[in-house]
Image 1 (tube, rainbow, N blue to C red):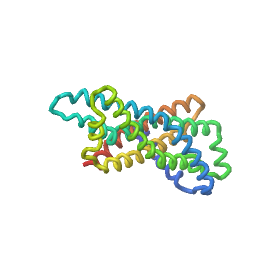
Image 2: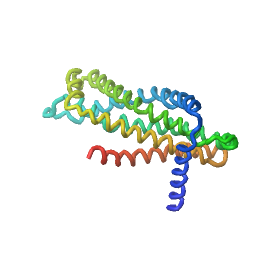
Image 3: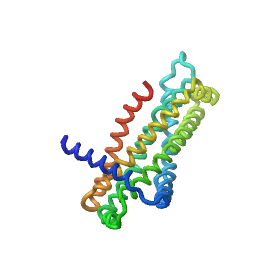
Image 4: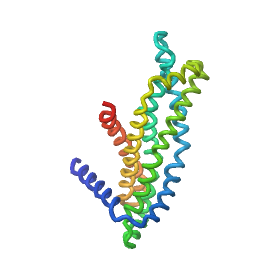
Length: 248
């Protein structure tokens, strides 16, 4: 078990070395990166916005129902919603969602190219297949995922505000005061740093599982599942590590 893990870890780092070596023409990467920005980035805005809206609404309602003690000022509902979204939900939870959507897409796309021998053709043509296929995806997610996190933060807070005011648990003035109260700008920087790490994990791990798949369509499906599971576990692990390093 340990030897298998070390073997897979070694293959992963060897793949990363191949990805960042012998790049092709910059014009080729530019076209591929623009395509991946749309495919992996823009196409993810919808699900991120929907999940973030309801996530913000639920956080607001749960915070309200757990702070019914009259000793607590009502603006704490807005403050708790803001900090929960900034510190955890818009970076970690959105990353887990993207691991399922983007990660499975990457693994299945590259895995299909492997089993249909398209990657072998690229290698015969002298193209660095790992760099050509994976690097544009990495660049696209590293660039666009922070924007997805900012969208998630904004939509989540709006969802919380609407849920709080329409349900009557907090007034609009108190909620807005709460999201402004004792605001720490570093929390946004913290969320962006985590998002970049998570984007790299999702792309590299998913591409690894797709690139080394063997067999047929069944194995491609299994590789996609492994990509999502392993990406999610690593996201949660690095969430703990980064929280300890950045907030301690």
